[in-house]
Length: 124
Image 1 (cartoon, rainbow, N blue to C red):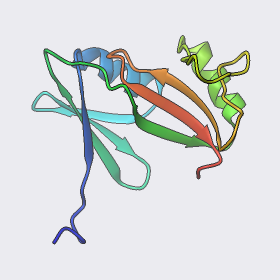
Image 2: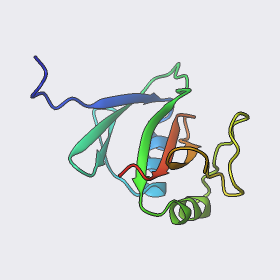
Image 3: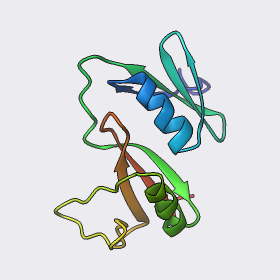
Image 4: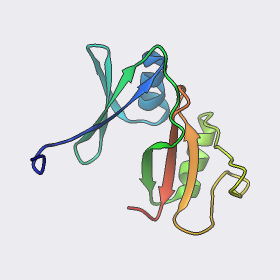
């Protein structure tokens, strides 16, 4: 039934202006706003809709993963833009916040609304 449908993902934020600045300026994504909806235009023609929600509760899981070739460079660049990386009690990151245990290298951070995002190396 939906095999040929171009499905898309979406998530909420509590401040559309802050989200637009973060995704557009800090992360360098191409973004557009129309009808009070933010669209993240990702590579591969994979748009994601971000919508304002007054009673927004941040996702407690990773909403968006950004595959990178060099996680060290990505973490350094984001850190230079003021992004802080998450640390979880059950995982041990290195000094930069990169988790290097089993699986791909990954570093989690949040958007201004508290939604969890990641940069991940080894998942291209």
